[in-house]
Length: 374
Ligand SMILES: Cc1cc2nc3c(=O)[nH]c(=O)nc-3n(C[C@H](O)[C@H](O)[C@H](O)COP(=O)(O)O)c2cc1C
Ligand SMILES: CCCCCCC(=O)C(=O)O
Image (cartoon, rainbow, N blue to C red; front, side, top):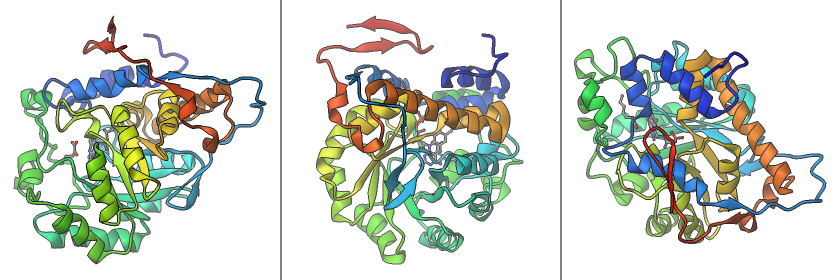
């Protein structure tokens, strides 16, 4: 592929990133769990929703502005939390933060970031909301310390990831015997050198007994920040999130990295939106690679969407400029989709713009090539 004029879509960025990253780091970013069914269905499920365009509606001015948690953002496209941005580029999360900041939406910072949360938020220009992602640890004081630092630094919400009581089994990492490199420091999370394996970092610290009561209710009891639960796929858990006073849920299967066989995010979204009944905000991530994907998720009721791998690919391509490029491509594609569907504001995008033909399924092979339409 010739990229002389720069990557023109997210797929181009993926190809470039694959070419420039060391195989272990690439494998860690790319992998899904086990057979990667969920990772691939996150992508192919979008194709099962078709768009209903409306015309002759004056689309000379289009705005993607909206509100999230009551605050205005320039666009409903944000950055999902991802561990270890420095695997992609030496500037890591600081570069991502600068790029996200110009973009004017939301950046969710991973607990396993390779830059401290204070430094990351300091790169912002005030137009972007920062949310802090948390895993709640057996040692609650470790999690509480991160909450206190996030509050003090100006983070606007806490994102509690619930789909990882244990880490999913990623076969590529197992084959590569990949573990976080010794020279990377997880700056928000004290660790000794000997514990630098996924098992030691994640397994030994995680709390497998975590529940709504000892996790979500505990977090509510120690902070006034809004709590968003990440990794929700069912109406039952949405109802519990409402019961436990959460401000929002992120419909997500962790990019297919946890439970292989779990429902794709876009397919789970409608039932979560229905159960939410406007009592909390619903966001989604997983498989967004096109502006049309963002549009479909908004049409099915998401208030905002988040991307993970496209940001990492941008970072591997050219650091801050690469992330800007990735977010810019998606933003432009969203605006184009709005013009071509006859929508000029986010509020106008509703369910009437998507159509899901029944009994039609598209299938991709592992290289992302279309192999069947049933
Ligand atoms: C390399 C990598 C690291 C991730 N690290 C975290 C993490 O630390 N915390 C978390 O809640 N989710 C993490 N995720 C999951 C993402 O936040 C997100 O749910 C998912 O990747 C979105 O799908 P996408 O990659 O198709 O955009 C990670 C995903 C990737 C690819
Ligand atoms: C350095 C520990 C990484 C923990 C796992 C981060 C994550 O959520 C992932 O999907 O990978």
